[in-house]
Image 1 (cartoon, rainbow, N blue to C red):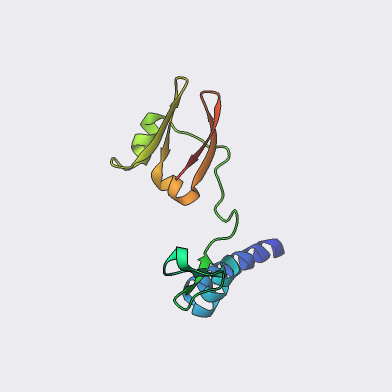
Image 2 (image 1 turned 120 degrees about the vertical axis):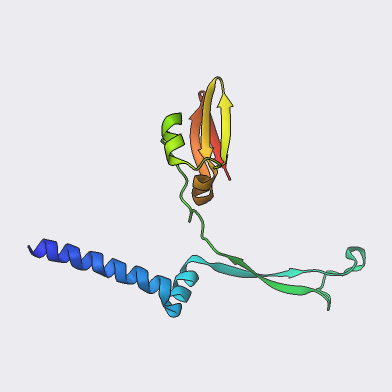
Length: 133
């Protein structure tokens, strides 16, 4: 019984943490700081032929912010596919796909799914491919 209680408390703690992350501004800001990085870049202005090696007065300094860290969006490494009939039931009628046909083997990758994962590593017709969106 103690393990059931511990499991329930763990689940409730995770739910509370999720709610805090979604609703409490200080927690949101902390989460963004964990996932983001920034660096300062200088954008030169004016005529590039007349510029000296030093920065000019009209140069613009910008903060370049990276929202997601390296490998923050996991690739799909071993994609699973459904039959055309199952796809008809699961997908919207107007859902776009990215289609690939190699050596007589055909695949369709859902654009909404690719938007969440950005890359699928697959083998189609015996050829390794990386499907990106």
